[in-house]
Length: 353
Image 1: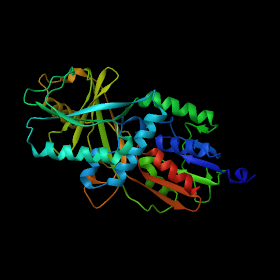
Image 2 (image 1 turned 45 degrees about the vertical axis):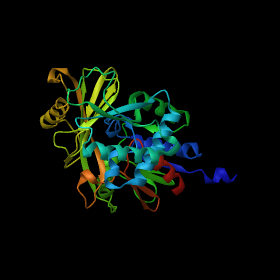
Image 3 (image 1 turned 135 degrees about the vertical axis):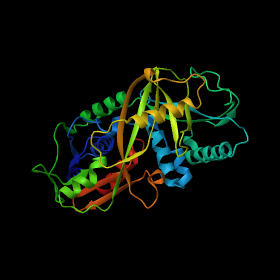
């Protein structure tokens, strides 16, 4: 009897990965869930990722240890629960000097990454002098490679399974149903719920303010762009871009290679597209390590998405990828987060219902 009384009607605004996973977790708790999505599920930022399931190795540079640990725990959750759509991926970092300070720093950073993963570590990192199986041939000067393991996903097939699971749990999916009006008392599009969860990624602050609700966080809109290249890789590659401010990944993806990502601050999240400068940056960065350069003719497709980073006093390159939940009576608003850590967000939401 108590379980029946505890079941609540939950309205989730936003059908990206965060809204969908939160809905699945709540439905498994016995709540009646409805998801409102202005387009189709997983069609916006959630479909524009680097396809990695990771703790965020480079976040260690900014001492975001707890965020990395949560990400590594969630990486394990994805790999264990969806083995048909996820896998362990070997990633190689090439160096042209075995005694370089960058190699030494990277080695100890990866060892810390593995330590934080604990029993959920995916494999032991190592330093070697050659790549044995790669269709990309790197320049002769890159004779030393630091390798480690992370998670990757086929986000399309994984997304289909998640949507199927949501339907099995009797979640009401309301696609092409844009929400413009809601309040802190549980009303969404003239329907009443016990709790509303606003999970619209880059649009969170904007929608709050449109409904005269003060946002406790500011958002930086960060565009990330990717290229799909008509070559193959056996392992992933991680290397410095030509600007040296961030790493770029070249990853195996459906018999091709996914190259990305960029980080460019933009003024709004609508209709992101890769720019000529971003395309040149990705190609030039990759070609600096390749013996046989790639050309524009080998580009199959490109895509861009906008990540919502909680604004901080630091440069956005150093901003945390963590999340924050704002509570206003019956309304919970999610800021930040990413695909990998959506289960952590969902577990937190479950405790707040």
